[in-house]
Image 1 (spheres, rainbow, N blue to C red):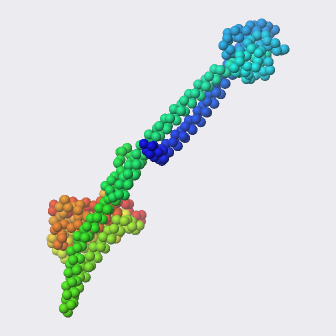
Image 2 (cartoon, one colour; image 1 turned 135 degrees about the vertical axis):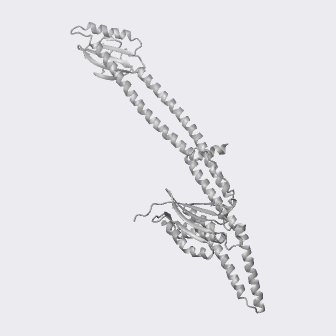
Image 3 (cartoon, one colour; image 1 turned 180 degrees about the horizontal axis):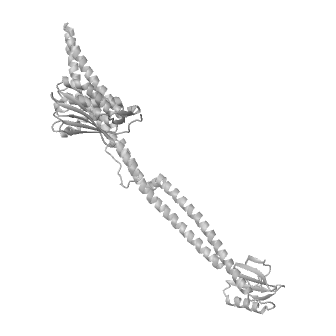
Amino acid sequence: MNGARSSLLRSTPFRLALTFAFLFLLAFILSGAIVYQLMSAELTKRLDQSIKETHSLIAATYAESDEEDLVATVRDHAQFSQDSDQIFSLTDQSGNRLAGDFTATGLPAGFSMFAATLPGVPRGTEYRAYSGTVGGNNLTVAFSLSETEALETIALMSFGWATLFITGLALAGGAVLASRVQRRLDAIAATMVDVSHGRLDARIPLIGNGDDIDAVSGQVNAALDRLSALVDGMREVSANIAHDLKTPLNRLQMILESAADKTASGSDVEAELADARAESQQINGTFDALLRIAQIEAGARKARFVDVDVGHIVETIGEVYADVAEDDGKSLSTGLVPDTKWYVHGDRDLLMQMLANLVENALRHCPPGTAIELLVTGQTDRVVVNVRDNGPGIPAEERENVFRRLYRLDSSRTTPGSGLGLSLVRAVADLHGATIMLEDRGPGLDVVVSFPAVKPPAA
């Protein structure tokens, strides 16, 4: 329990929550101080206004050479103010009290403050006074500050309790929010620990509220999916290499052993050496294709991307392979819209190789008499390339497997090839942000490659 509390106190979310709470509390205190000063100034202003009005009201009762009404008015005000909240003083020019509660001596004209230092003033009370001359006499009206001070005390206490409440609420809320964020960060850390220990299927749980942590977690999960797929691919490739290259390596070994035996007996080994060269070239070709796919998947070729007219590539492929298809008893035709260019952003050589692999794949696995079509069409924001044939096609359950490295259908194991042609096609498509689908034509196969389109370059 103490460890968990210590971990929470050291956590970044809790520290951020404390920082936010401190800044909020500081802003609250500063705003409260400003409000208190404004309130105190307003109370003082209203008190001065009440004192001045009372002084003017009493002074208005004085008539020339008739100070009896003035004395009576002061006496009445003093009599009705028995709680000493308001006290009055009327003195003559010599300082003798004529009426009132106290004797105001030594007070300046206008507003002033005084406490219990004058005769008749209650002890322990502070007053705000206004003094002025009325008919040669000095009239002083003083109001106690107790009510104003009581209001200020209530305001201060309220502000103090509010500060304590807000501080507690900020700390508690910060702790709750920080603990929730910390739990999510702990889940991310736990997932990464699992991944580091080899559990590549571990994923960060998502809350689904779409906040920034969920967004980052989703991106990390996507990266883990990619990592898991790459690791699985590496394992699969390793197993496939061990399985598929075992036969040619054994065949190469047998050829070399036969050549060695013939050499020992003085026989001609030219045929064996030619066979050995062919086998080694096939093995080297397989490894070269694997390395090329790895380089493509690494994305290093993106630096060579430019805007490329796919139609021109299709036209070139059609010209190169038309005679090859005819010699093999098949036909290859291209479908292009006249005077129309379809641009994508990519590597021309890789796109050429991708389409060449698709055409070669159709030529290799289709029987004589097959018609192969290479088409380019455009949509609003996509460029679509179709490689169609009316051959035997690919079973639906095998259409995703054929993109795996070194994977070959049972019906294709007697034909030349390494099982890497479509793997390279998928790698090039992924590098260009394209989607690739295998669709049934009944009979035949339609390979659909859809690229993001770009605007034609300015002339």
